[in-house]
Structures are given as C-alpha cells and as structure tokens.
Length: 88
Image (cartoon, rainbow, N blue to C red; front, side, top):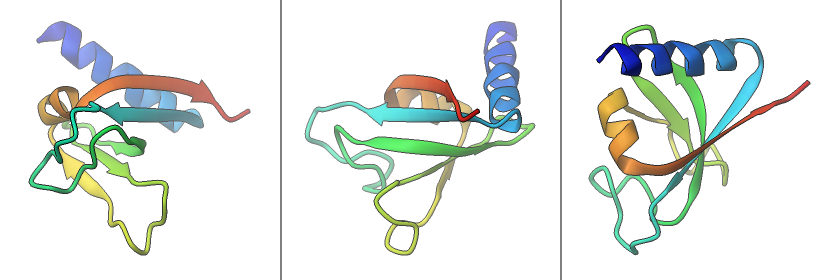
C-alpha cells in the first residue's frame, strides 16, 4: 500500500510539473471499463487527484470521447503500459 501511495504521488507530481503520462490498454480485442476503454489503444492521463482517482482522455477527440475517471486500482488493472515524458 505504501509503495502504491508513493507511485500515485510521483505520477501526480509529474503531471503538475508539466509532464505527460500516456497509458496503453491491453491488445486483447476486448473493451474494458464497461465499454469505455478501447483495446490496444493509448490514452492521455489528464489528472490524478489526491485520493488517487485517475482521469484519462482519448486523444482522438475530446468532443466525441468524454474523459473517463476511475480509481487508481482500476487504472492499474485496465492499462498494460505507462509512459512518462516531459513537455519542456
């Protein structure tokens, strides 16, 4: 649990510092999270709240695809890969 809290804080701080986090779903052909997440697809993490709630956005267009918010536990189980980068 402590390690998870550190991971949440680290990723949250990276976002606040202007970083970018991209999360990719598994390529199993199935939709996840009640059909909201597409298989084998990348999403941009737009927020990690203090309570660990994570919001992701489909980069194909915000008007067609609303943000999806989930617990950190669900986030870890629904996404297979996380890439963290800098914008500056």
